[in-house]
Amino acid sequence: VLTMTLVIPPAIVGMMYLLMEDPQFGVISYLLQSIGLLNSNNPILATASTALAGVLVAEIWQWTPFMVLIFLAGLRAL
Image (cartoon, rainbow, N blue to C red; front, side, top):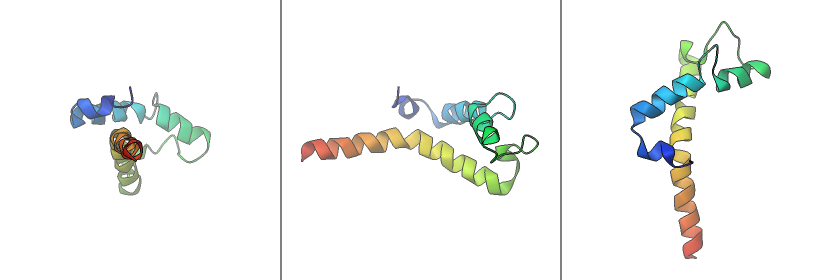
């Protein structure tokens, strides 16, 4: 499940992330609104300052499992 983002095209990863950031039904938007970091009238990708952070989170979400696998393989080789 963790490496699923590596075997699907980046466009599909982007679509999945947009669904998670949806202002009405997205999990990420809900969590940020519940802790007070996001206003419901201002979606994450609406402004330039928050869009960069949103894109960075999507990239980190896509590539973190691969980096963890490489790290664990290196530790195992020791």
